[in-house]
Image 1 (cartoon, rainbow, N blue to C red):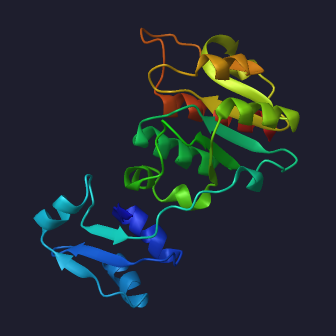
Image 2 (cartoon, rainbow, N blue to C red):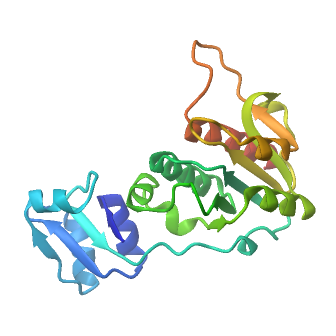
Length: 231
């Protein structure tokens, strides 16, 4: 997998994650990154800027790393904590939203993220760049069936909190204990079956002319409200 951007590169280089190749634009001038590359004993492949542009679809800032594919976690790695805090993404499609949610989860100390294996965005280069490299600090587990997973979590003592309109004011919900917060699809929100299996629906009051927020923004608000209650 090819990842790109200065912040992502710094994260990989500083943590000594495996790096297969480094591509640098011929006018790349970030001395700290160049020092770290040299320290790792990697000989970068220098390309013209237009050659770099052809390699990836995004703002690479003059550096691209060829790294192993992202290693997903298993759900059992994070659901058995006494007060586990989990986020579930119900068929999210936008990699920028996914990356932003990963970054929020890392900042908030969320224990893990659950995503469906099919019809959902996966961890790719855009997700990693948008998350500013925090994917390496957050456990992300793909599952075959979200509804079955939700019911399994309930059997293990989790409260399931969906996010949607026409629910309870998100500031009035008790987030203590083992919880899973669900973020729905950008266009259609949570699926009917997922919504039907929630214990609570958290809604964010709207006072302007728009009736909803970007998925990653709404999820961040609920996550940090939960943190305020839990801490």
